Length: 422
Image (cartoon, rainbow, N blue to C red; front, side, top):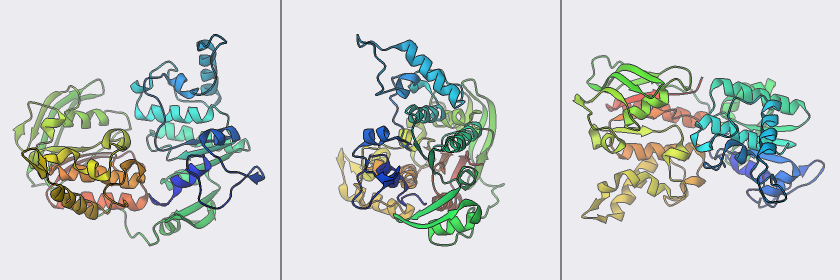
């Protein structure tokens, strides 16, 4: 289903996080309704949601066994038993190498996702729900998880696998169910239905093309000139030119310096080398220096929930946080001007929210990503850094993002683009 089709709400009901208004669930031959997540877990249902539930200051093993009883009679944590149980779990499911005593805050987003999966499996569930669980994973970890899901189901247990990547669905699922606007619109044996049919059922219309036409920018004005850019141990002596009206793609296997490149260009962390923006050397580097109006640089980060949004704040607050001077004077905010900016951007990007004051954390993943885009566009920066902007969004939203990129390029924006999609 598309973003906002009801998939996450559905699994939250199964996992006890949301109470249904009506209807019934049969589980193991009996009526079932979980009053809360603990009740669902006790019944054997574990879920990996899009929003990670890890505690950054705890270690990997402490997060995995959080809420389990691992204390001695004197209330001391039995660290040896905790370590043995963690290594046993890792060995059972052939987990990627992650140190059990590593603090979660020091892990990559992909490794945090792996720890979240381990946390779900630690309860030895009968039902494993995976909601966009591969969206942060590299190809190797993705293949590992697909194999894990297949093995889990092969043991006579159940897997509910939610993904916008149809090739993954085909690899692991015997049956596929399609949601649209909160309803089931189709159910198929996976082998009996084509990708085009599934996409049409998801969108309620036929999608003619995913990628827009390309255009020639060989003679356009130079927007960004990078020479000898290095940062950390993974980014060394990178050279490239980015022109006005161009979408420049960054290739390479995941984890081979792409993140460091985008962070260095936006002024996050220390870097060496030369960066010229619209013909001028960037000497002072930092996000504040990058966001300098039309001649600046704006970033769509890889983790929209952790880096791109304040989830507890409204759509309006997220959209305008970086551009408060645009609707203020003498320290006084103009609510009328702010309202107009927000309404214009929500209409332009087709952000589906009940009102501008809806909390951003309650939006679907695709609409959250649109809010991140809107915040970026309101800065008026003409050099855009898009790090994996279609990660975890449905094919319809993905097509909208690609079309938006091409439309922005046609207006003279210069876009650096990286995607983990295969």
